[in-house]
Length: 171
Image (cartoon, rainbow, N blue to C red; front, side):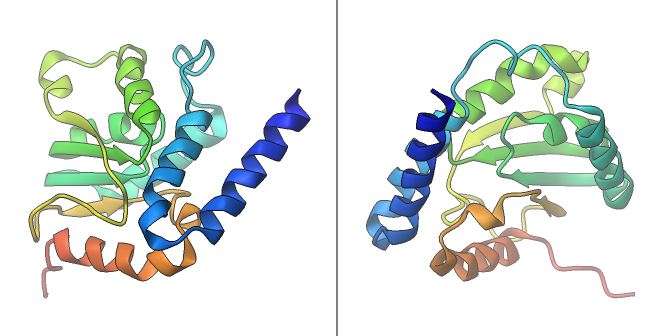
């Protein structure tokens, strides 16, 4: 059975790689909705030790005191939740509606206060078409996401990130 799933997944990646631009978003949504299907084990467990160690590194690099942070390709939302005390607003986006739902369901794992919960928002959105105003975010964070984009969409994605990121302060 696992072999069939892996074969289906590979076919979906091949479909995405060979898709014309107009079809890529829908194919990616379907592919990652399958990956993030809501099931026991995905909702009720914190990330593995290795992932928590990496999250700690991201937190130390980003630091505190920001107005807004965006996580692109948030998946189960763990990094978004972990950054709650680093900014006034944290938004996690993912192309998969299932990932966004999963991330929302995992809130209880993080023992957050109401004021922290109010800072977090999850949105279904393609990393190639981001519906945010220019210069909105202090930080845009993405871990293990860009390699899932179609190669022709990487430049568009990076242009979008540049557009909605605040200009770096000149010292």
